[in-house]
Length: 195
Image 1 (cartoon, rainbow, N blue to C red):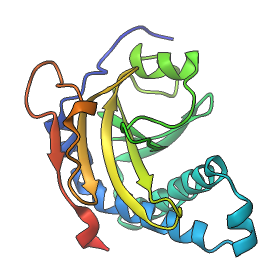
Image 2 (tube, rainbow, N blue to C red; image 1 turned 90 degrees about the vertical axis):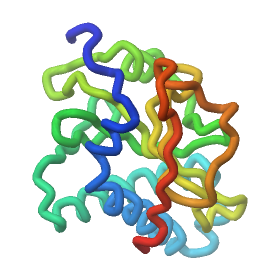
Image 3 (cartoon, rainbow, N blue to C red; image 1 turned 30 degrees about the vertical axis):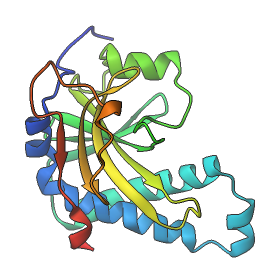
């Protein structure tokens, strides 16, 4: 394990890194929700939110990698580090898939490992020491429709910046914190037109 590295990733650099992949990542999310909704109704009734989120997560990684490979985009690499799944892009940034709460934070409980993974730049033999972003989504109350989706640069208790990629424009700036005091800290691009 190596210490701190390039964990700071400005929003404009994230847009540059993920921009050509974002349509595929958003469409993978749409496909993942369709796959979840394909379960028989009794299963959907029996599944709690955590189970639904885990299903969407696994489907998203499958469909994202499938779409990226079909698009012949060779500068991405999937990986996993002690249960922390990710896709690295151009060896400049990586993205993890998450279900967000109303504050655009992950809904799962943080662990020491996940906190260190985000904030301290834990680097293992297979994990590059680069910016770590989340591709996060929020669902409606029925869990059949995605309300919105975002790419964020997380820190322990807040996001350093937010890039909204789906849904009506998010306007609760109170849940965000400026990245190093620099603009921009929020960007809106609605990729729903790609569907």
